[in-house]
Amino acid sequence: MEQSVVRLLLATLKVCQLDGEVCVPSPRSIHQAVHINNGFGAALYQALSSQSGNLAVSPLGIEAVLTMAWMGAGGDTAQELLEGLLYYDVNPEVFLALGALVSCLESKRPVTFDIDNKIYVQRGIGVPDRYRQAAMEIFRSVPDEVDFINNPDCVTSCINQWAEKRSHSHVVDTLDSIDDKTRLFLLTTAYFKGSWQVPFPENLTSMEPFELLSGRIANVSMMYTRGRFKYARIRDWNAQVIQLPFKDNSFSLLLLLPECRTDLHNLEITVTSLYLKDILHKLQETVVDVYLPRFHVESSLNLKYTLMEMGIRKIFESSANFSGISDKPMYVHDVGQKVVVDVSEKGPGDTKEDALSIFSGPIHLKSTVFRADVPFIFMVVDEPVGIVLFMGRVTDPTENLHAIMPIESK
Image (cartoon, rainbow, N blue to C red; front, side, top):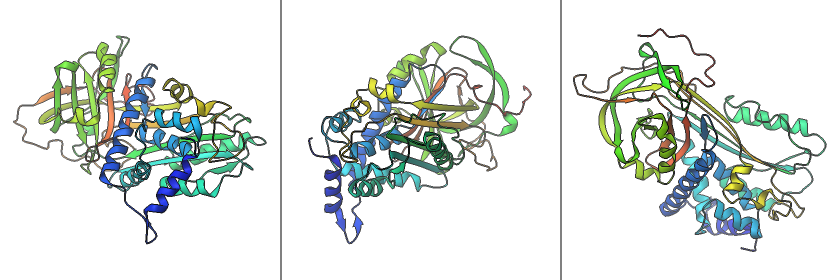
């Protein structure tokens, strides 16, 4: 793959032009884009899982921003990015599908889902129009030219303001500082807001024990609801799985709960070897009493060394080939992502909607109990599309919960 990737993409865009409109990617390309995203997300989570504490990551955001870098790469740098992103069978239409997929997910209501990606380059490098056009066509984003060399503090402030605005003020102070040797910086923000289809009434939340990985017991704000949910107890995994839908009936929160705290690591290995459809097909609708702690997971991820561990190294080396962006030598300083996942009685995000009736089915039906009182894995998914938007784990629900009103025990 010696030629610049961006020329291949623009050629495809040109072929797909029809009366001024870009053709809609085929269902096969959409399916391939979803398959690649979920596979990359599983590999990324697996690489990050060795870190301690709570964790949240948006694979789609990272894949999109790295694809924007790939569009301007050439030679071995482009080939390595292809392999690291799991684009083994290169079909240029898949990149159109990835952009279309992001737009489709963002347009769904009543939930709010936004992914924004940004590339900052040193002023004076002279980014070609062909790269700007491709970035705009596929990801609705163009590189910003800034002065890393002479004014790194101003650039830091600019990046932080952009991230705060794009994340609806949930992501603040993304960067402490930036190096004046930086010439290229990649950034992605992801934001999700929704309300439960079956809410957790606040008056039923109580303080209950949660066993941390260390074995220590923490008192957490445990929410409660009952309803018909897709659920399974999977003995081979030593785990329970439940899908909690949001009001749009498309997005949902998927929870994977090990039988005991010591099983979390094995569950992470098992889950990241599967695709979303492999998990979802095990679920059956069941009446479930759900106990779920409030949690606020805030992850600031500097992904340079994680990506290098996954085989993406050349973009960070001084010999990197970004000939599609500039004929001057340049390389990626870092890839950063900040993700905030806030789950409460009203749902993830900052929704103000009131809670509805607790029961979605007859109260006399026998129910199963799903009690998340040990560390667990979560995913925000779009079931019809079959894509994972966020994934992570909660090892301590009390972490970062600064403003919880005290609740009396039952």
